[in-house]
Length: 572
Image (cartoon, rainbow, N blue to C red; front, top):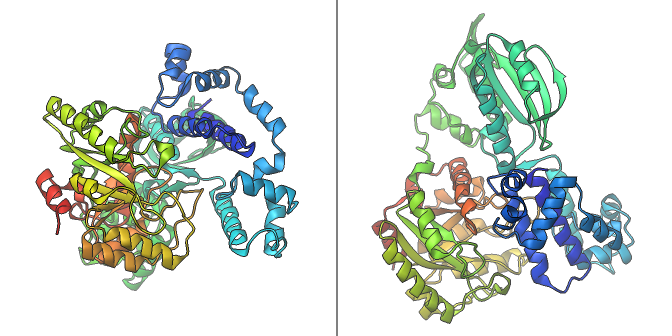
């Protein structure tokens, strides 16, 4: 059983416990955290168990003895007796309604018992007809319908963090084959979009039939759907559909460009090509009756008098015009990041000590690392008040002496309250090196109030960064309703940076808003929101969002050396 499957089961347990009015909130959170940890863990739980048994599972961050035993049962049997027992207690329809983003246990019960909806389809019909308006307010009904829409859009799609390891694994296996020349994954995954449907891979070979045979017999292949002489579709053991197409090397550049997309980019590119007497296809570029083939994308775009357009920009948002004028941005690279500004320690809800965080920062080659624990308003995360922050500072000072190669900065992720005030006193915030302010409650305020709330935090004299600015959780919660131009103007004027959260289910601020914010002169911080060691690796997904948003090194404050970062944080 794969990590993603184990994680989903643990999330399901947390939801059903909540549905049953479980009094122990920390027990529910324990299942949620274990699920999140396991879904993002770099090693499969099955392999962890093979190496060290139950004890090794218990050593995984956020996995206690009870949850470790349940994971062991899942690995051994593929089933979990405890979950089956919970399902018997909880009504089927109520469990189904919990799948809808934004619907909690109380609402699920109300929908089933008062509105008498049988399932999600029935609920959608009733709400669209306006039934139950005496039971459910119109705004709530609209939120539920939006949640149903999110659920439908996410069906059959994976987060990029689920899809990318699968694609990289298959590409790695194909590269080992002597018959294979070039090979790449394409489509929305190569463009690093936040969610992925099927995984598409293209390769070159003079012996395509042999490659197809080997491909369909890979250990990770669970089912073969089609198998031709140069194309094949299979189902991966984790449920993803993978399509492989093999072409001669002479056509590889054209095919790579075509299948990378996006559809909008390709349509715009074809339209432009027609204006200069050229015709594009996956086979190459035709001028009159002559077909020109390309083994690489640089030559393909060059034939159109364009610079090579990075895959992340191919969304028809001005990249074709910029490529023609040789004015494409020099996109930020992973290697440009000099430190992570949003890391939680075991002083709040993180799994690592400050010493362990410093060691990880050194291992990654960072120049600085920022300890950014939750504040007191987020009680469930053991948030810190002023007294505990002062105590934590003593530990930071001690650890700093033992790790002179990396600068450890003292920070918080302070809560932006419903009225825009912060939950830590100014005298304490002033002592910190850097301050991130985030919204963690009251997500559904109307547009004017939410905008005013964010702008008030942006204008606070001690706030340097706004954390996960739109508040979205992919597949679970829609972004806040906000007047973004007003927010961007405030950020540019006050010189408050917006965070790009690299956490897989956030990837917030999204790419199109990054591109828009840049036009206002806004700066950004790419952070992981790390709670355990494995989360540091997520930084590449934040960089991918920044690249999709046309951001360059100069747009990102944590690409700067420490002295320039200090200068940013000490702005007047």
